[in-house]
Amino acid sequence: MPKSDAVWFKIKEEGRTGTSNTWGDTPLMKAGGIATYTIPKCIKPGYYLVRHEIIALHSAYSYPGAQFYPGCHQVKVTGSGSTSPSGLVSFPGAYKATDAGVTYDAYKAQAYTVPGPKVFTC
Image 1 (tube, rainbow, N blue to C red):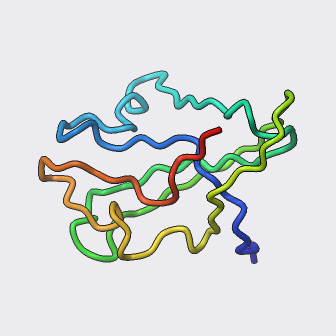
Image 2: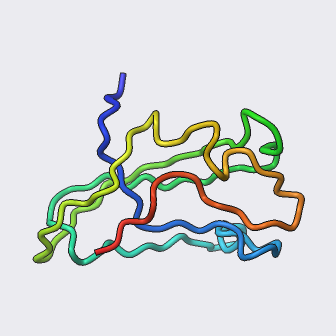
């Protein structure tokens, strides 16, 4: 069973663009679509596990709400950064049923708040 230590931090998030039908995953739905991210330069070197997650909202209008589809890959960070990331969370445990974005009616034109911790910045 995986440990539940708070070791995860967020470096990027994309949700809905205003109240439009453009979402963070919209570019991924095209042939050759890719997701990109930048590791903050201040992070100290080492191996990190990146958790990429798609949040499905098609039936999130009532609890239990959103469906979370994570995937992971490992990266080696190099450079001269010296910062240990803050805002650490654990999985399971990073999301609560009452968090914004866990229950949400995606069929209404309304802003969306991505659940989870704030994005870590240097």
